Amino acid sequence: MTAANQSKSCDNSQLGGSVAGRQLRLTKFRDLRLSDPFFDSLKSAYVEFADWFARKADTDVYVVEDDAAVLSGMIYLKPEQGAVSDVTPPLADLKWLKVGTLKIEGRGTKLGERVLKKIFDTAIDENMDGIYVTIFDVHEDLIRLFERYGFQRVGTKTTQSGEELVYARRLDQFSGDMISDYPFVHIAGKKAWLLAVYPEYHTQLLPDSILKNEPREIVRDVSHTNTIHKVYIGKIPLTRMSPGDAVVIYRTTDHQGPAFYRSVASSICIVEEIRRKRDFANIEAFLEYTAPHSVFTEDELRDQYVESPRLYVARMTYNVAFNRRITRGRLIEEAHVTAQPRWDLRELTSTQFRDIVEMGDVNARIVID
Image 1 (cartoon, rainbow, N blue to C red):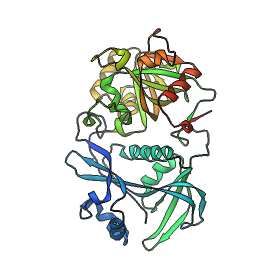
Image 2: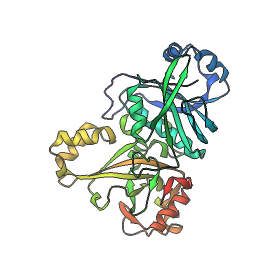
Image 3: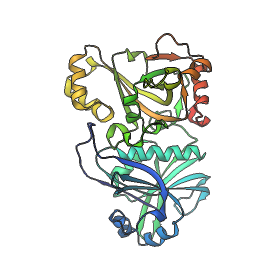
Image 4: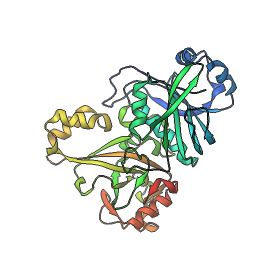
């Protein structure tokens, strides 16, 4: 059976600050309690849910829990090989990742985007040709989320619980649009850059790029952590970059040892847009644009706007977390990135970028020429 559901409630965490955390983790169905109120809507929507749940006891499932182990999300992903014949019309004979069950209780923190990134990461890591999901038409927000990232309505599926819409995304076909093609990185005709981020902001902004020596508790359930779209704010001239450029994120040293070993390249982002302070009509326009995607609090953003005559903003998509972080030493010795000029914003050659991608143990299909 398949299910898709997304609930919403409001909170005040969208501008950052300290909030209760929700973590995305992998577990087994047998470790979940079907009596949990979280499952009530699924049991009422799908008459076969309880039997299906019992059959999945030894199967992996992603869940979202807060610090008190309260369940607020569930994502079941199932690899399938061959034509999908229980939908109309059938899906092509391919390797599919089926989003079998998806329920998220939203709190205004863009958790749906973080979950969608996990779906893409899983599909790419397992070399799937495509992803599909079935959704009841009442779940309009969830449908819009999938459509934004390239999913198209391709059919219907009829079960004893009713008719669902089928949405699919091929991972071997591309439109050329950076959002519809997310998380793939198109590099033809584009530049690549190394961009420095301080340790205190790095993992809050890029949760899948957490270092092994960092506590999981620093990854919090707030918009700037969950969203696929990140905002970088600084005084360096970011206008050197252009939409579509690839950005290697460089986490600077935490001063607990030499930067040669402690500073690391961790991720790849893609530039969506670059703005300067003068591109915002006023401080409210600046806050509206930056707050949901920046690690800074509203007060910190206000201070930056007021106090900094030169201010640059880069909006980027968070595409890839390296499977292997690359130290500054390896970047210098193996990717041949010279120590000077400074690495706050540094243009990379195409060879350096490809070497870094390979050193980061990134799935080769993610970068498209």
